[in-house]
Image: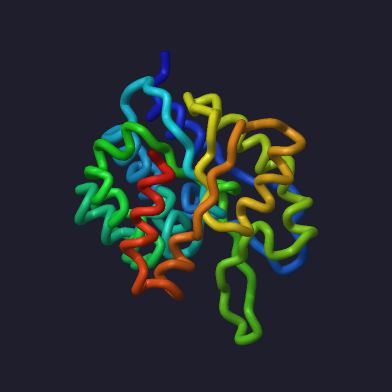
Length: 227
């Protein structure tokens, strides 16, 4: 019987998206673009998920260039991966505000080992997306930024969520990061009945960028809703 870790590691190794995307949008897949990331992912999930425990799901939007788009691990940048999880990445160096919030919340929860024993963090789309801005720079793109992108990704998102639920997820509730993210998950959940209840909180990036003075209040809200 495979452990939770083995299921996640295999899922990540096989992640790909080969269907057509709207013009100008590209897939961000760290598992294909950086040879080091599969070993980093394996080290992380082996450390925290080498069991068959059921876990509750925390669902972000999609990987960004400085977070999971670089490390392969949702809401974990290279700094926190090294300093808190004890896993060092040689090939990239990133700082992601969302990761700062999440790991402060995890610390107040009781630390990484306790937290990851009970929760699994992933995203609506496990792959990220980038597009060129007016200056010609590649920037993050969310799966819901364009209706045609969400429509194109719907089968991929559903298949990815369904497979990850099979790792051993408690579907009585799903903890959703971001109100707009929750809006689109509700569209899927109303059709597919994946979760009994959606518990919604503001996204860590929004909190760090616009509500940093109230961060402790938001952390307390997260912990209260996580239970």
